[in-house]
Image (cartoon, rainbow, N blue to C red; front, side, top):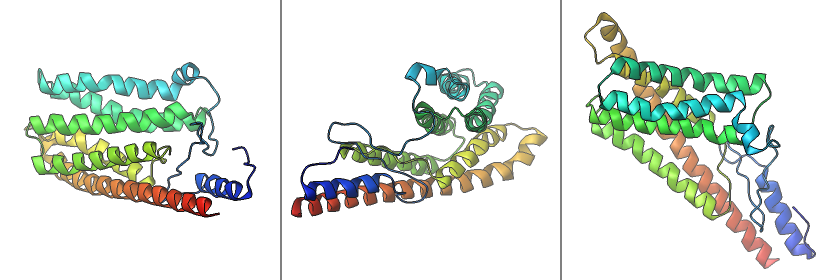
Length: 245
């Protein structure tokens, strides 16, 4: 960010620059944009290539493939009730969710597009699965309501951050853990719907993973809200100091 001519304004901008590089809450960095709308976050690996070049990177192709599987999953589950194929898509989604992160590090192909696609695919799968499971009476409505409320809170936080010209914070370890657990819970819940021995064996694991993942998911939403509140409050305080100086 360019320095301002006035010393007070320069000091205020310096404080915001420092803030843009600090961790806000558990595991998240909130980057601010300058007056022209340009982000001033800390640089991350892979931000240089164009959007098209980022899209054809192997990790991002996996994320795009996962996104494309969402409508297919919903159709299989709600249309022909092809639970076996729907289960296969859920398993594939969970495996690629793990693999795309590994590939990004192994191939040094970490990109801004990947940072957006991966959590977007995770969130879309979670919401789609919750709605489908509710319509199929696989999980109770109150559990779906709690998890969807968490999503609504996260969406409001995102709007607040964008309104104040902040970029979304990075995904926390709690959020990653919650997604990981839920991605294993959902296939198990689908498997439990059968009458086989495997369904009976999977039942306790399915319910344990669902409760564990649900608690972590709500917790990560609370952390996200705290990050947002801290970022906005701190920025307003810095602006008041800048105006006073």
